[in-house]
Length: 446
Image (cartoon, rainbow, N blue to C red; front, side, top):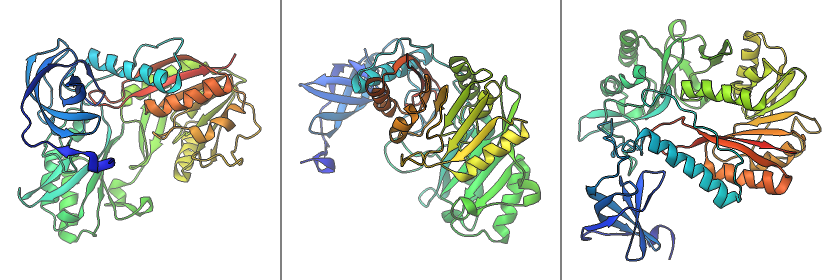
C-alpha cells in the first residue's frame, strides 16, 4: 500500500522524550525512536525534546514538538509572531550562522549523494539583510465568514488556509505595512470574495499592487481602490485573466515602467508588475558581481546567457564582454530585455526566443562557439538543454540554481558525461529564514 493511503493519523499517541540527531532544511528535527525515523516540527539537531507522533508512514513518522528539555545553542527566539503557523518561513528558530551552515550542507550533500560530485572549492556564502528583504511576493486573499473579514498573507504551514497575519518580517517594509490595511480594504469591497490574490512588488521608483479580480469591480469598489492607492502612495493594477488582461486602475497614474538598479553597473532594469525579478535586491547585486568575478568577461569574449529573463545578467556581462547572446522562452521578457539594452545604451547584447524546456535541434545557438555560458533555470533545472549547451565548447559554465536536487542532477551530466569539473560552488542566501537554497556553481573544462 502506498501513496496517501499509507498515512495513518495518530490520535492518542503518548508523549516521548529523545535526542534530536539531525535537522532538515524544512526546519524539522530528526530523531530515531524504536528503530524508526521521526521528524519533529520545530526541533533542532542536538536538542533533547518531548514530542508526540501525529502521523505514521511506512518508513517514518511525523511529530509535534511539546517541550524543549535541553535547547541547542543555535536556537534563537523567532522574530515573527506568526512563525510556526505561516508557511513562509521554516528556520526562524535557528541562528543566522546555523541557517547558512545548514544550507551549505544541503548543497554539498545533494551534490555528493545525487551526482557523486565534490566541488574543488566551497565559496563563502553570499549574504545580505536578514529581514525586510523581500521586494516581490504573491499574497493569498480569502474572505473568512467565521472571522467576518478578509485575510491577506501567505498560506499556513500545514494546509491551504491563509495565515491570519497583519505583519511580515521578511517583506520589504513598504509591503509589510500593507497586510492589515489590504485585508480591511478587500473586506470592504462588494467583490471581496472574488479577489483570490494580490501580487506586490517594490521597484526603485514605485510600490505596485496587482489585484487578481474574478469579477470586474463596480463604481463604489473602484472608488475605494483609488482612495487606498492615494492614501498609501501606490500604483494599482487589475488582472481579470491571463497576463494580457493586466490593466492599470488609471493609466495616467498607474502606468509607466518600473525599474531597479544593479549596484556597481549603473544599469536601470525596467520590468513589468508581474515580471520575474529576483526577490532580494541586495543579494541580486552581490550575485551579479560574483558572476562577473567568476566568468571574468573581457573584450573579444563571446558569452551565452540562457534563461536570461529581462537581461539581469546579460547586460552586466555585455558591459565587459565582446558580445552576449541572451535566450529566453517568454516573448514579453525578450522584448523587455531588448528595451533594457536600448535604454542602457548597450549595443553588443542580442536576444533570441527559444523554448528551453526541450532540445529539438532548433536552438538559436546551435553550431556557435562561446567562451563562457551562464544559465539561471527554474526549479526544474536544465536537463533538456545540457547536450546542446556543451556543444558550444564553452570552457566555463556558471549555473545559478534555485533547487539543489536539479542542480546535482545536471552536475552529474556535466561532470561524468561531458568532462567538466565543479571548480567552485556556494550558496546565495536569497531567502533568509526559509528552506529555499539558492546557489551558484562554476563548471570548467580543461
